[in-house]
Length: 475
Image 1 (tube, rainbow, N blue to C red):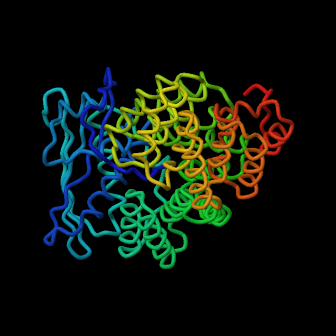
Image 2: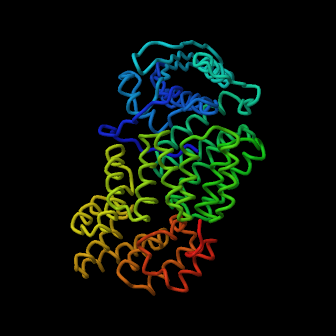
Image 3: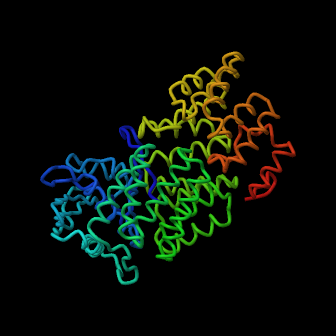
């Protein structure tokens, strides 16, 4: 699944130690249209090509969140290859004028910048999909990889207008904000109004609603119901669509707490297509929810190799694996890297504050929480840090502000504050409230160290059982 990526500066991000022999990064294609207003279209073409390449067995394709941080015009193949662990780069230009699309693409070696493959196309928009297949086939031949396009026929042909709405939706979704996510929903719905059987738009709609539900921009019941409806439609239209299974796996994990259903969907996706970063990340989340830290850590490492500049993978390892498994200093280092990649991403400073709090570096934790937004943990984190510093009045003030702002959308975080302060009854009441709200952050409650003092409480154990978890069960 292609998750929204809030991009930032990537300077200082670690380089991948070794590039695999057959690995490629697709850079965002450059818009050279007459009005220079088709960036969404050029990037969409590149993203679709990336998705097609990701289906080629034996070819490692770097994730979009990493490769799209680069500007093709200023690309240094050797430096990019070292950072991403890619042996080749695919670059391109797109000229979109009316119903015609001209695309020029080339593959260069990151070792010396030499050209290894190139081609140019002049097609109608309705034939863009076939062009993407031709690019994939050309690259496969250049890399001496066998590719059977007949075994995976395209099911996404539609009109020029439908495809345009779809690409606009992809661009809006990638921006990751509340407003852009709403725009993405509107674009995907416009595409489906014109063509109710256009599978990519159904998957995009599901992705958008998963993100909206995860961020609580709509009540989880409504957002995840829409996401489920969209993915079920996608799978009805195309039962072998791996990405649709990945989106449904997110719904089953975050909202349904259906761990076996999540596992089945992930396994089905991996059986249908090569492993890509979004799916591997989903598998790591599942292992973390069940408390299997060794497996989760191995999966996070795999996801980082596929998408090294995706801050969400670093956040996954830090917040959902290192912190609950007691590796607080590792989490701090991981979050420092994530902030170098995406300095404006939400939640990262809250996670950093938590890692510092658990290391008993209370003043540093308070400073980190203070830099977070009010929507992403500033109030709740500050309440915990002030409490640790012995400033009960300030802690109470922050908790009161957090309760006023987030009671209806983030009950689980308020429960964490009460648990940290040793207020067991209040913590249990807020957890019950989070359960009733289908709080989008409740899925990882089992291993959360901030709830460790509730472990022996019968009501906490009952909550875990209702969520198909058990504090004493093995993953």
